[in-house]
Length: 270
Figure: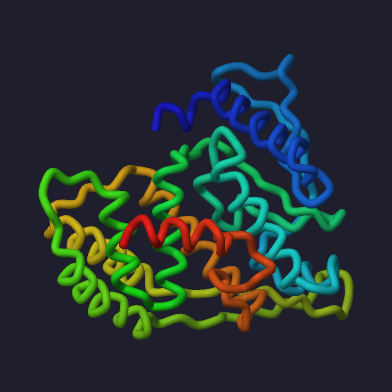
């Protein structure tokens, strides 16, 4: 919490992200506000103003780009790439912090909350995500065992059976898209805004169930695991809204897991 209100640290997080974009050749696809150092301090952060709309504003997004789905894919690829190629990753990608800008780029705002993940943890996380998509619960169990610190042997097959029971409850999550319309004050044009409403209690219960089941096998996860899961839930909401037919974890246009790395790490877990 203290880091979140230290604007010197937030400024460094922003600069690190902008270096990542430049190094990876992504500055034409995404950006973050420029920091004006001479007007900033530990208690004051002065930044460039960006103009855009949240990823939940369907009407405005459609006016800016022809394919909201492609914009979402860009946001996903930039964020996933930052997990290992940047010093830290943005760990609070709610709609107020993730915009489609007027120039078509994705704007990442507010770097007060960031996470850092080791290559080893991310390798296990990749397998975990791929296993969710393919419903391979033994691979999922192995990945979670690899991530979680434990000093005892874990019955991977029993763990996998418990995970399968738990993840079947995901199908019961209540989600809906709420569309609101409003007529502009100076025109006859009707604006349309939409948002994905998810029962937060169910989402929290699902995550707590995952932690509870894992802890029953003696596993303790790093803080980064919770941060990553939270961001993936945000992106899942954007996907339901902007690209309902997109499978975030399996679409070949999204660089989550390379098949070569996936197979290598799956072999190491088995």
